[in-house]
Length: 136
Image (cartoon, rainbow, N blue to C red; front, side, top):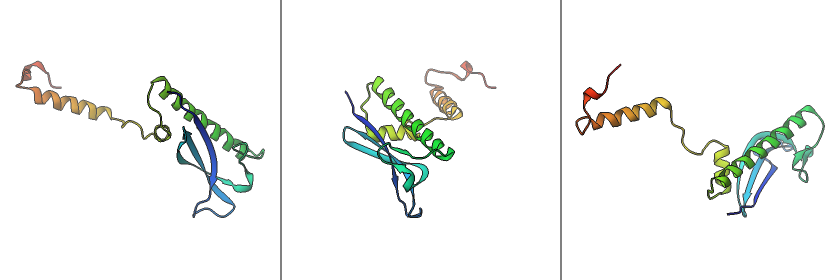
């Protein structure tokens, strides 16, 4: 299924920011449905160019911010492409969650081994015998 993806950065004033500064947000829109999250970066409002979707200026701080925004955009497009290749249904919130690491729950290796050992322990006497296993 073809999806129309748009990624936009925009300043959003918060209660904790002075009037001349705003926190940059990312808006992901897919087929008219959108999801937003904070980039965690602040910008002086007069330095933001809404037309180019970037900060304006030549200072190293501005260049670093624009590179960061380009990286965020590239990662979001990569996630979108990956979901397309896997033929999954894609939503803006799915892309946001994967980007923020809220996708599949990560499992720790020791926990996986413990779950396996518990399952085997429950099978002893039901076709498996203690003698089949050695203990360390």
